[in-house]
Amino acid sequence: MKKTLKLMSALCLGTGILLGSAIGAAADDASINIAYQYGLAYAPLIVAQDQGLIEAAYEEATGDTLTVTWTQMSSGADINTAIASGDLQAGFMGVGPAVTGVVKGVGYKIFTNLSGQSHGLMTNDENIKSLGDLIGSSNQIALVNIGSIQHILLAKALSENGFDAHALDANIVAMKHPDGMTALQTGAVSCHLTSSPYIFTEREQDDLTELTEVSEAWTSEDSFIVGVASEKLHDENPDLYAALCAGISAAIDFVNASPEDTAALTCEYDGNSAEDELEYLGLGTYSAATSGVLELAQFMGENGFIDAAPASIDELVFDGVEGD
Amino acid sequence: MKKKKSETLYPLIVKIVFVAALLVLWEYVAKSGLLGEHSALIFPSLETIGAAFIRNFKVGFAGSSLWIYIGNSMKLLLEGLLLGIGLAFVFSGLSIISRTFSIIYNFVVSICDLLPGVALLPVVIIIFGVKPGVIVFLVVHAVIWPMSRNILDGFLAVPQIYVEAGRNIGLKGFRLLTGVYLPAATSYIVSGLKVGWARAWRGLISAEMIFGIASCPGIGLYINQMRTNMNNAEMYATLIVIVIIGVVVQYGILSPIENNTVKKWGMTR
Image (tube, each protein chain N blue to C red):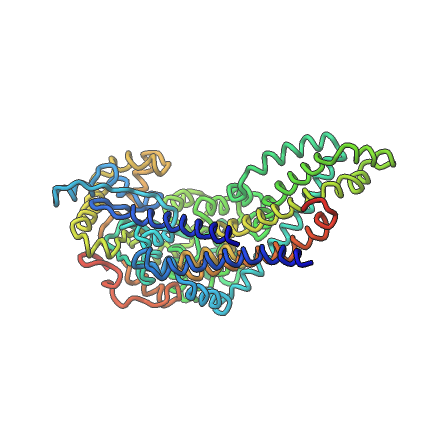
């Protein structure tokens, strides 16, 4: 028994030391950890990283050097957890998880829009002509995740066409974009709701047709990827927050002003040829002003994607963010 | 008799003290705010997780209680487990009967045991399409190779003298397999069952997390939904459900099998 107690206390002590050192290492001035995800929608961040735009903005304003650590993560949910734990000060994710994070009290708000992209619902069955043909059927719709922005857009398209927002929930199969594209092409599912660049590949295929309700419900002008920053960063470190905003804004300006240079830089990351990348960049909207965020958040509140709908845009974004 | 009682009591006390210490540590970290001001959201206290545990079953998600998700998962798991174990026995048995088959099967097991099921997902979708059968396939994949490896190793470890004795009394082929190899390799088979079950259970949850069919939603999909919606307490509570199911199977099914076979026969301690 004595031995066991010794062992137990050793274990507790060990865990405590580990926890303590992990927490102790987190605090450091003039550094920022930013997370983003994979793909074309994040193009300005590759520019900001490559040209050191946030570092430059910080140095210009304060004269001090700044270390920016970029981390690529695989989902908005992971980024939410990392920001709540204090490991990340900023992150980029779909507007869906960002609204969920703000409403759940992760402790951040939206500080910029990043991009809007094309979304669409494709089918390989020529008998399916509209969303109405899917309701009550056993046709399966592949999309990236239940509760994802693609799922919310499906619900929004249904609702705008007079159907119940959740009428097709039981038809959903959650699959990553490339798996969903494979499943659609091989006939394993009959529909795939996806975003750029996968939607471009699918639109080019003759045997696939588009159900346009989804692309009409949310266009490439509307906010898709937004940047969030922790309230702590915003309140306690205004210089760094300002440098973050300025750096991202400069990166967005660069993407719009020099699409060729951007494509040359980002094509390797996205696995496209430089010509395709340039074409795809032109089909997206890169802007720091949000579009439709409040509308989408209210739709999410009304249809049970989040517990309560925010009453105004100020609940979702920091002061000084343009757009609605 | 007295000694026996302390022998069963001691491991129980050790486990209880260990779990209690872990819970105290968890509650301390949760309550102390060690993890910053949003600690309650990402590292919920035991009460919050307890309440979420009950809410999972009472309210659930999207109108379905967690019971429904568990039911679907268990059904797919059982199908995959039975199929996987059955196939492992059939193929391993065949490799005792045929030398050529044994060479091929040993080779296949060595290769396939290394492949993570979820990495095969794109291929599986092309072959099987998108239906719950895909999950069953991945469970079969998770269980058949480690189970076969154990059975094959068990057969290899059967002392040659037993096999010769069997041959001397006229056993060969299938009857040599059931009369000598299977009983002599039981301890390997039981440990194969334990490994196979754990692999299948983990394989099921990870397959469901990646590949969620809304018309047949399982526990993995439930965890994913809770994560997506930042319902961390519900997510932790679901992890506890996974552990409880694992423990029930371990102590309710696998341990009795072990106690009534290899332990009773004195093959292991």
